[in-house]
Amino acid sequence: MNHILLCVSALIVACNSAGAMSNPAVVVADQDVSAGTVTAEKVTAESNGWLVVHRTGSEMKPGPVVGYAPLKAGDNMDVTAILQEDVKAGDMLMLMVHSEAGGTRTGVYEYTLGAKEDGPVRVDDKLVMTVITAK
Image (tube, rainbow, N blue to C red; front, side, top):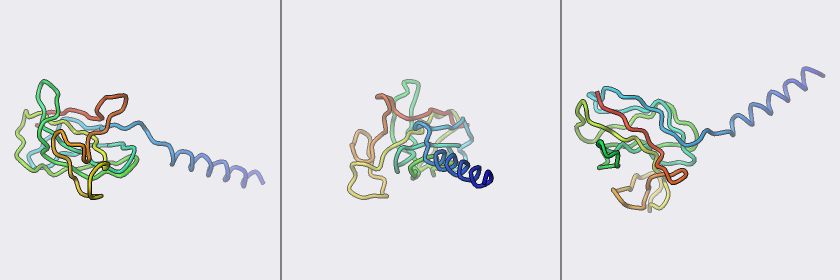
């Protein structure tokens, strides 16, 4: 009987843990991008969307998009975006979570700088992003 009770308790904890999700975030470190890709170790998204790679500079404002990769709701591990233009060592990149909302086609990245389609996700009016320097 105790064995059954223990199994049921473990199942309840596992189900509650599976439903729990961290706050939206991008975990990524400076890295070599000479192979034409950039990889975030972990990206947490509230809903399906995109990891978008913007150019940025010392002003820390998102610039032109140079790559993106799809995200599923929840934790996404080792998310790799193919860079669509050359990025040199020393260039700063802003990896940001964008939503799938507002576009005309699901599963197609539609954002252009300043548009509402597939736009940036904000939490407490702050962009969900991390800036790295390419090596």
